[in-house]
Length: 357
Ligand code: IPM
Ligand code: MG
Image 1: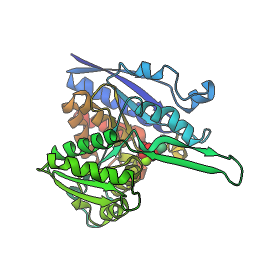
Image 2: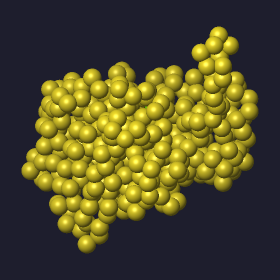
Image 3: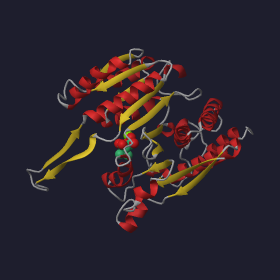
Image 4: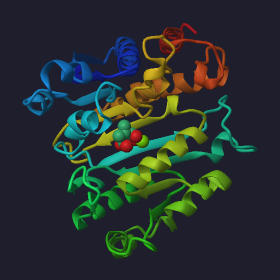
């Protein structure tokens, strides 16, 4: 029997609700498959932990996570604590030291889901946004001086390293190579930002020759937003900086129907450290505790996690349950125009996994 250890960090807001649902779903998959077992350990880190202990996770938190095969994360963010504290204290405090440099964000218009774009068929919107996840605009470099005085200065310094740029571009090129369309778009803003972004272009020119089988194009980030809306079919894999891809991936999620379904993998491709999987929707405090959160983003993320740990069959079963669920459209959560709560959606997916529905 294959065995895996998963660290679950539900975190804040609806994170708790969707991760609990996701854990039920992956346990149902393991039970049905019979070939593997999941030992899932829960970590109560997040804002409640912060209010008790003054930090989002314990000092030795990373050591505790290291032996796990993967991390299943809900969200970090709570109105009681400034967002930059919760983010830097938990999510980035895991992504950066664990060198999870490839943030992979697939977006698909699932059959049955009505996205906001007119005349776009499901096969026309099938993208993966690859986000650089350890440096760039999120490097944390900068500072504030003359605090509170009229001459106060605040600086966030974007940091790009050649190593960081080359490895994320190669990761995206390899990913594009593995997909049927074999197409990659490099997104930058190298007309206005004339140092780091031009280095992105230079590095790309040096390495793209290694991928002669791919169709490649380059786009400025502002123009990319219009292309996503006006010509979604022309896009396959996109690689961009930490901040640019953050913005593009929210747009991608909205265009594919809802923020509630979008998944993410924070990958350490070398597998020196565990990778982390999470829905991209965040803590959504306005709907917390009401049982109405859409767990599909957490389920899709769980499918990515199963794929990553080496259970592609279970990953595919889960993905096809999600697709069937969407195509039937009977038990849709509120963000997708239905009335179903987290419980009903979870039951419907488990029913499909167990072959009851
Ligand atoms: C995301 C989120 C985070 C980010 C927030 C919560 C800081 O928007 O995962 O895309 O910007 O990285
Ligand atoms: Mg975001």
